Amino acid sequence: MPERGPGPVKVTLKVNGAERSMEIEPRVSLLDALREHLHLTGAKKGCDQGTCGACTLWVDDRRVLGCLTLAIATEGREVTTVEGLAEHEELDAMQKAFIAEDAFQCGFCTPGQIMSAAALLKEGHAGDDAEIREWMSGNLCRCAAYQHIRAAIRAVRDGA
Image 1 (cartoon, rainbow, N blue to C red):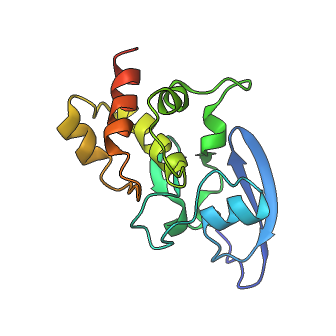
Image 2: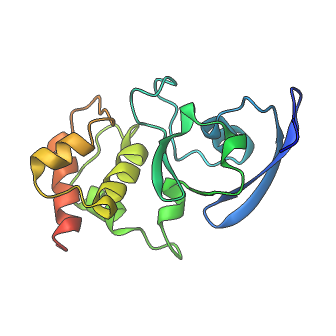
């Protein structure tokens, strides 16, 4: 791969099924590229140090922290944001469950929580509350809506 930068370079990302190009410096995080250049503001900038999970996204269906991932490193890979979970304006089952179970209070962490919750179900880590708690441990909620978040995950797991 040819060396690129240090100034702005053209980066093309596949986000929620659509290719999007932008001129950014190679050190721009995926979170900043999405929020500031593509105006996809679902993923939140919380701690910006990888400890709160508010910026959780999927890259090739695996959870990543957008604040710790370089946008340029995701070229050629599929990036999914919370906006990409809904299909044809129909909310994803986990998004619906978060609403039904009142699994958000201030809502700031909710996009990251939903991305992690949907991922842990795909990964098969929702056997019981202890397992759900362990696999959601990287996502912090300042409002302590954890019981409601676990209820939403159980509802989707159980097809309720």
